[in-house]
View: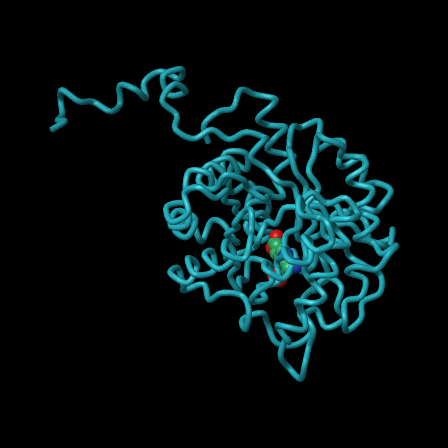
Length: 333
Ligand code: PBG
């Protein structure tokens, strides 16, 4: 048995280079996926008030943003479209010439081989009621929504998305999308499923940015109860059986146990975690007041998500942290 004083764990902490040598988790720009909001109305572009440092892009500014992502060594972006006109069917989600379709086309052209374009696939940014699917009465019609998701997935793949990311938590969505992509000749388009997505209050700032707060009710009939962890394994198993390539847990920091459980249960599957808008904005808000050291808190948070088992982290901090990591030698949080 190891015992003090023969064993002193402080020895390996005593020298900065020794700490580097025995460090178990390393953050790198290659770990990140950067979410980008693209607005149709140029007047809506600019900084999101509840998300300092996050700027909504127009179709014209998007390529520059993609160049920056590429320069920083961040390998993927996730696109969210915000159309000028919304309707009950969310028809702008896959309209030819609609903002998200054009955004994918432009981003894919700018990105080349340097950056993978991932298209978020959900209806809530496009429906006038703000829900993630078709509404019947006061409920979301799961199976009717699948048809819309099939169509949007194929449209995004054919517009240049390397991967689609269904985020609506409809049952059967991954299988429906996989089938539609394959039937349309897009067998190589990958799926990143928001497999384990909780009904979380941490999405608040995102709903400002994407103008997608539900006009009535909430998302608890389809997103998961924050109290449940075993159910996450069931969600993951189903999505894998239906053909997802990557699993995601969302949000990240309040669900590190779930990330750890999934990592253990599915050791061979790439796992992503979404460090969501509220998690980002809380750090920004406290830092703005001088209450915390932003850089150390952000690095500690993202390191924790990776240490828990995430291979990729979707975060609004992607570019900022990538710049820090490249500017200085990657240091401990
Ligand atoms: C739905 C979607 C949401 C987020 C990503 N995709 C919002 C929701 O489910 O209400 C939230 C992301 C974040 O908070 O950063 N299309």
